[in-house]
Image (cartoon, rainbow, N blue to C red; front, side, top):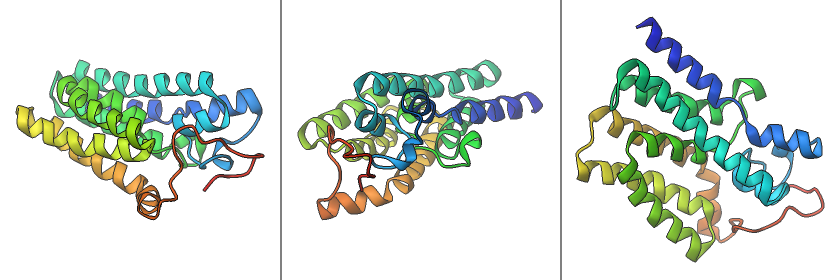
Length: 205
């Protein structure tokens, strides 16, 4: 039990490493939460810092989720509660990071890493549909929400273990909560599209 708690805590601390924040400070000496959309994630990194840093942030944020699930798997095995809880802990860390005053990103890249490791094929199916929605609408937030909404459905259809299904549902709730302002903007037609740039150092809303 103590070991399980330990790996969950370590997963949270791992998730709390915000690469978007670190790269923004390293490359421009800024707090990325004050620029672009104000989000500490890969999409806003693209908007503020450009393609190279954005790709690095995306890959590293995904790997946080992968590493967290593997930590849980080493303790509890595949499809176990420790694996699922470690994945959730990493996403919580990304969203509410200890090192950055609990103001982080929206957790989608880390969610991709978590779900792809817990359930590759359902996540891949949901991911393909999500990517297509981004291609046609250029709304990354919409694609993100489609991904987290469809993954539990795909899990139900393929019969994955209960810890993985419950983790996907909890993660979906997190994602919709973190994207609540984006949902309003999509409905009102004000949501930023993929490729939009931060102008003159002002925050894009």
